[in-house]
Image 1 (cartoon, helix red, strand yellow):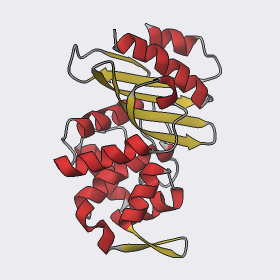
Image 2 (image 1 turned 180 degrees about the vertical axis):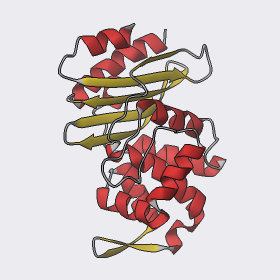
Image 3 (image 1 turned 60 degrees about the horizontal axis):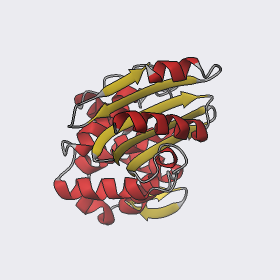
Length: 223
């Protein structure tokens, strides 16, 4: 098992990885997929669903929120949190729709191990993030137009040194998470005529390590 071998050979680092092919042979591989991790900025893709559901993406220009003393529209913040992983915007948008609502929405989508409304640490899993991105790609979360908009933002997002860097020539729609010792990347990958969702959660690793593992996984998934 390539994932278990990778995890075993990187002592001092924690790895939680899920790869799931969409269509094709439906191939999958995982290691420690249900381990809890601090989500870092992965929560921003979850928040985007609740904003769509509770506000409506067509209405985002009509509502202004306070972001560190500045007025910004929800659309400005929605795009900033997905394109640049802007933290003040991510937190302001999520507070506006309600952290408890985001958590409730995720549980309804089947993300049973995602907790975003705790007083201490929040948690999610690479398995949950993978399931979310599968549903996003398959058109189960947004209207067709909104799906294209959200995927387009994720394809243009600026933090590309993890999964995108390890998958040369691939079309990658991804979201990173980076907080102290935690580094994550969650992506929809289209490569060699195949589509798969890859979620890599780590503690103690670098994005360069995530890129190396991505190359190994992509070689396997596109055989």
